[in-house]
Image (tube, rainbow, N blue to C red; front, top):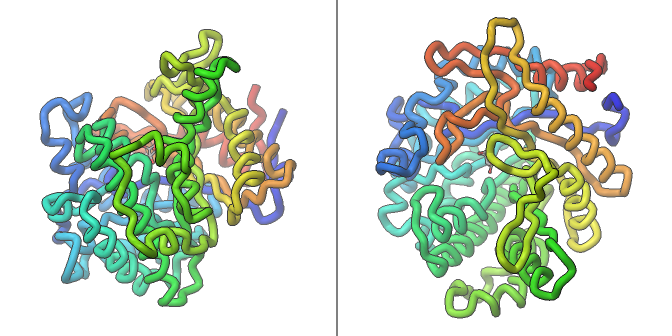
Length: 442
Ligand code: FCB
């Protein structure tokens, strides 16, 4: 089957996404302060290949060329994030004008090329000075975040089409403070749930600060959602799947869309639950113009733990390829929650690409992944879900957090020695879909 724009609702946006720490490099240029990822990368054993985002894709210098590539790719929109420590090097107080100027140029550069800017304020690079006072476990950091949101919005709100507060608060709380895989690398559930609550509070306060500025930008939140399917219908497996769903999804969906924490999880977390103060949930529930959904895979859950179905396909992250999970998820959100319009703000796959000698890098598995997941989005739209856009993760191969440079997600291949970008076949396929001259794929 060949997908075309006609398979999607009218006005549906196609784009691609990146994030500041993963592509910018220039870690100590123009007054940027250190972030928790600079610190984390220097701790032995944290990053599988021992690397860091110090140079990454050198996008801080190569952005004009990168924006030219985006134009050639033919995207309607580009989702990027801003590095808080470029704008407020210590996370509070004085603004570093050079940091804001970089994003000014980037936004203007996008608009000049006819590409709509979709900004994200926080994609995990917290100023280290705020971690020194406890990071997100400190309620004060929520207020600092709202202040930063106001600074950025006052400057760019007239030109960006959309501003998301947080990218994936599950990752910056539970994955970072409970599971310990991301910065700051702690393993403490009580601290993780405090961090999650303050992230959501910071989100709500930022929404209020931005609303007050009354710019034309759409304001919202990006969640990563991982549907949990029970491995069998046994009561124990069903319960385990319900917990997994609560831990990954409902702990964030319920407060932001319903103004409450899920009761079953509140009980299951026992003594570890956060200190929720009067008015917090009202703030967190501030109405959204959109919900961003990042989807990569599902989990298949049994009492004994997560299962890996033998007949399934897996990406280089060892994540199961399960496009049905995306349409199921979208339909569920539509049926069970009072959701605003949805954007798929990330979806994509890592495979061990090789540069080869051709003009284009061959990546048939990624191309098939995109095709199947875009078809799942179109399917959900046909079932009545108000889904308005899709951003492929990622434009470029980049610094994949704890995996360093060992996992490639790009539509463009990056040679990290020369910083040369090369088209992948999936990029050409996506270009064909967007331009209306689809490239048939088997
Ligand atoms: C998401 C992150 C993004 C990237 C992809 C693979 O969780 O938002 O930065 O690492 O996963």
